[in-house]
Length: 153
Ligand code: ATP
Ligand code: MG
View 1 (cartoon, helix red, strand yellow):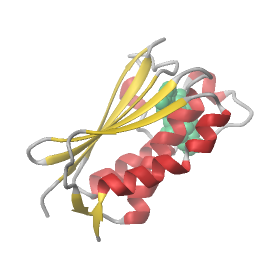
View 2 (spheres, protein in one colour):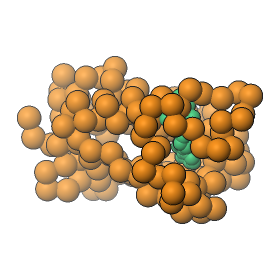
View 3 (cartoon, helix red, strand yellow):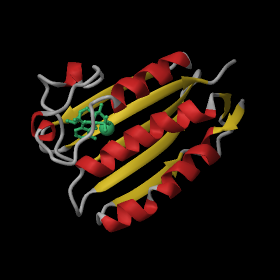
View 4 (cartoon, rainbow, N blue to C red):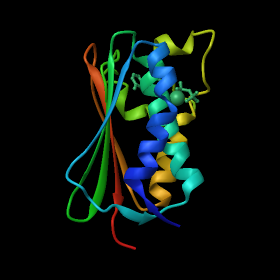
């Protein structure tokens, strides 16, 4: 379905505002230029992608931190970067974060934990849209996930 991704992402970010406020996390969204980013997506799956990524960012970032969503475009792709000032992920673990059931060491033992499927699902859905998802992280500094979705088709 043709979807204005800026409006689409704005709505998703809005839905996390209360959670961010409750956790004392600054949640911001920025859009480069006034771009027309209407692309064909499966809205339910695309919602799941960003709910999983934003949910992680807000869950793993401690109070006082920030979560920033930045929408921009490259010649062939819409780019959504989600950066947080959370605990970061050790370089050794980074290759595995998209694996099913992978959970960070400290997160495995949490009593209120997830299943470790969120990122695997996000990756599957992004790739089903012919997009890519990447992660960059520095332990103790924060994490950035970058989703690229083709603008054509
Ligand atoms: P689920 O999403 O199924 O509820 P989960 O959050 O543990 O559980 P994923 O979303 O797949 O599973 O994430 C896998 C692991 O990657 C997490 O357990 C956590 O250790 C790490 N991780 C994911 N996002 C972040 C982030 N923004 N900052 C730090 N660590 C992260
Ligand atoms: Mg998760």
